[in-house]
Length: 295
Image 1 (cartoon, rainbow, N blue to C red):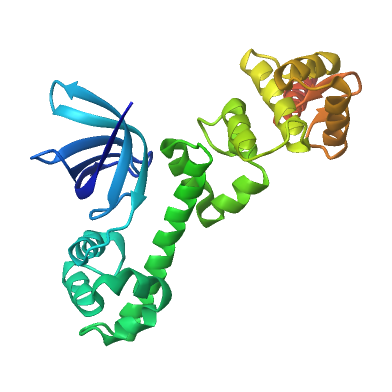
Image 2 (cartoon, helix red, strand yellow):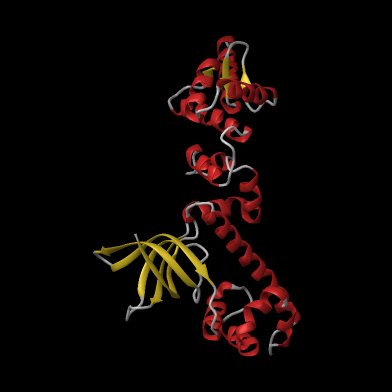
């Protein structure tokens, strides 16, 4: 695994759905711009990044650095800040206003945006309406950065981080902190095992109620993928015990609580259903009865 650091000069391609980007960076030791590809969501022109990945030779596009992970810092020089702000990062600031703002506040520009944005009114051509627009856009961009940083610090890949932010928005940190196992239910591509790794990284106990609940749902979903609409109670407990590597009584207690809350449904026998499958079965049975009763 190699590391590459440099300043983002331009973004040549960006997929907003999954965060995949192709960017050009100016890196020390390279005479020409270096092409970096990978999940680089929320990276902006002028930012300084440190990427971890591998080099590859693409038959069509030449030598590229394929990143697996990255960290970003904001520029420290006036020229860098001007390019950073003029990239379209903040609604209300284009290249012209970026130049005026950095000429006025110099190296203090980013601090002013962060702490004293009302002072932007001092810049020629910026009225109160534009100040409010800039303040709102800066806050939104900051929130995206905070979410990405939080997720990356908990070993969540950038690709998944993009999906999480698109699903939960500004509530991403709060939701993931409270119950990372929700990711397996809400976000396509994140299964129980991935959510379990994230939860472990965040310090969730192996015997937590959230993990037990998620394990039971995971086993029922896996059985559904094999064509089963329900699981016999003992089979469900046995398989969940195996997956979670926990004692059966703890899982049994969690199962009973989920049945009581109607998060799972047990019929008159010992069959345990996920609610959508149970009501589908009832619906199908009802339709068959209706058909049989029709002359």
